[in-house]
Length: 106
Image 1 (spheres, rainbow, N blue to C red):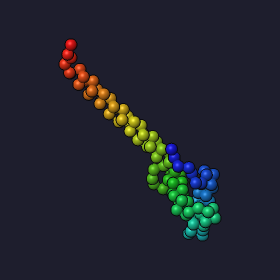
Image 2 (cartoon, helix red, strand yellow):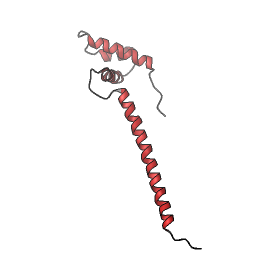
Image 3 (cartoon, rainbow, N blue to C red):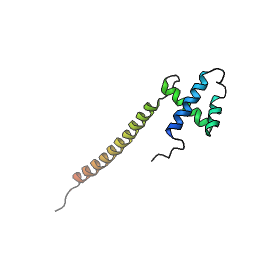
Image 4 (tube, helix red, strand yellow):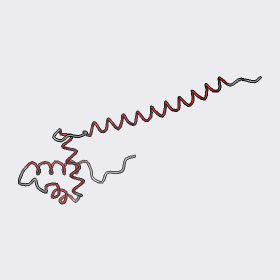
């Protein structure tokens, strides 16, 4: 189960939008993330990470997009489940093969 979010989605979107807009203007670019984070009562690094991810999702920065990361996590989860199922089937197959090779006494 995922940990509860400290900040809601609406605040995250608003803060990210404000920071991105301020960073586009050369006069307000320096320290924009720190100012916005201070106004909204959050740590600047939190907002910096949100802005960085928004830039990746928007295609202005290289990196793994949110949708790609989610898909990758799903595929890794499915891969783990399949490996576990294969291990169980291999173990069961070896067990039953050994049972068939064992001579029966009557």
